[in-house]
Amino acid sequence: MLEVVCIPVLNDNYVWLLHDDASGQTVAVDPAVAEPVLEAARLRGWTIGQIWNTHWHGDHVGGNAAIKAAAEAWGGCIITGPAAEAEKIGTLDRLVREGDSVRIGDHQAVVMEVPAHTAGHVAYHLAQDHVLFVGDTLFAMGCGRLFEGTAAQMFANMQRFAALPDDTAVYCAHEYTQSNGRFALTVEPDNAALQTRMAEVDAARARGEATVPTSIGRERATNVFMRARDVVQLADRRAAKDAA
Ligand code: ZN
Ligand code: FE
Image (cartoon, rainbow, N blue to C red; front, side, top):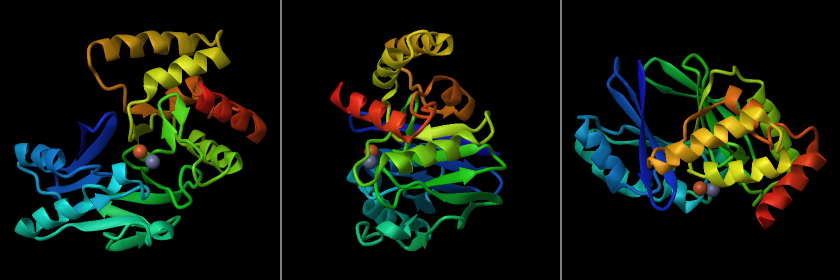
């Protein structure tokens, strides 16, 4: 069985610690920083043997080097990330591309290239486990900013994600849900699923709880970027959100 632990760091980042009971292996996904991630593992008696990076931004790779250094005490840590961003992430040991697979114990994650937020951004899809790590490409009710790519690329990414099973758990790298939901309601004010979800999200945030993971099914119902009918509509919505 896979366990996923949420580690909130910095302003609004989530680092995900993925643990496989059977093999005892642990993966840190997008460690923005090292110490809270090492501590979360230590508390559980786990040792981090892999890091999976989705893209080169500092708030996703900042903890790589220090975790790798600490891992010398338990046999090392292999850092995997997008081949297309290898020049920007100096700490990578293993470069991956579309369709490559990485493993934690007997669980397989297939790499999806989802460029747009950054030019080489990847997601990690554990299909058998119905788990998807999306970095900064898909957010709860939102999508990543188009820093190095186009609306057409992001539209294609959203279509790919939307085609995955509804019960796929989606682990995003930021808590942007309330802001995204407020914007989504300006686009689809009559969307009942969106209204209900926003009430739940507001209540969860008032209690200080994370609103991630989300699911593909929930995003299909409430994410106005995934629901955009074409590239132009996605581009318009992204531009409006950027200006909001
Ligand atoms: Zn980013
Ligand atoms: Fe980020």
